[in-house]
Length: 475
Image (cartoon, rainbow, N blue to C red; front, side):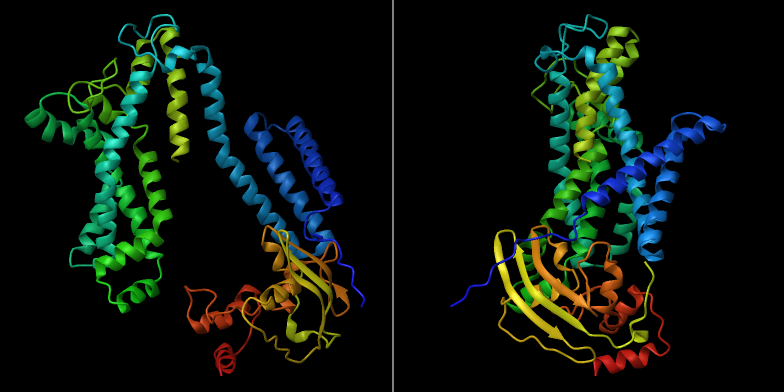
């Protein structure tokens, strides 16, 4: 009995050392072009360096892909580079803020900053006196109270808009959208005039949290509504078909399915209020010592501490304010190719699989499969669920590589050419090697007919009689 040797797993879709060196060379060349253009033109300053480099890098990347793989790959490289540059521009202000805060506030950082309050110190005292303890505990208290009040109201509002859909759905949705644009000072003034002066008559953390709740509810309600709308109606119908009432279906099926999205809604709500200053100045009193009772007496907060320190105006107080920005900013961020038409191809040798092996991590799921698919014929793969049919098909058109732990060995030949060979245009390959999904509508937001024609749209292929083609496919 002979045993066949199992080849070593390979990942031919991963960029080779040569490709990485080319990318590094393009980066270096773009940098040189950037320096030269800024030096010989009137464009000066940091912004000039950034944008000239971006234009040079995007152009050179697209040009290389056009020379190597054609116009479609050049377009893909151009858009990918633009997306990467957009991500960099988005992160640039955040990085700038962090660098500035660290640079200006590092002198005010000491161990006592997080263990002492300002009850025995003033903002103009030496930096070694006093600390942030009262401001940190006060901010956490305000945010916690606002969460306790706003999360149930926001999620229940979203449930009414998506599940109940009563006669007040449209006015409630309009009011929620309108409240999203309410300035924070308006919320603070409302609580000040409607609650604090006529009823409470004293500053407290609870007054501040009421204003923050007004600002937080629209964010949670709108985000939760969008999340709940993404839950398929099939889940609701299945719960009802099993005899469950509407509230039990929502509580046991809909809400658990939307759990991660609802958590995101809460995080966005916290990000909305964490740095608010105006209502805090009006309602909390800005205490300088730790206050464990949120319902009685002034309470400190990070926004109030920063405002008070900047307002004092001395070098010590300004450094103290920049030091206070560190935990505040951290909290805000944390919460916060040429196309070929298949119909015009000459009949070739077809598709050939030679010694295909596939792995998911350490699991060897396909072993030494050799199979020919003759051109112009239909080949059916029949087998029990989980036997590897889909995995084998995915290796044919390189869909296998989308799984992070995937690896493969062997050859896949399309008209005698290895589809895994370096420099292969994967988009072009997938125009000729289709993928049959295990459901009639791989795109749930489209109709069955639109799903049938989606391949033509994605491949930018023009067909004269789309309706006749769709009917033929469905029959």
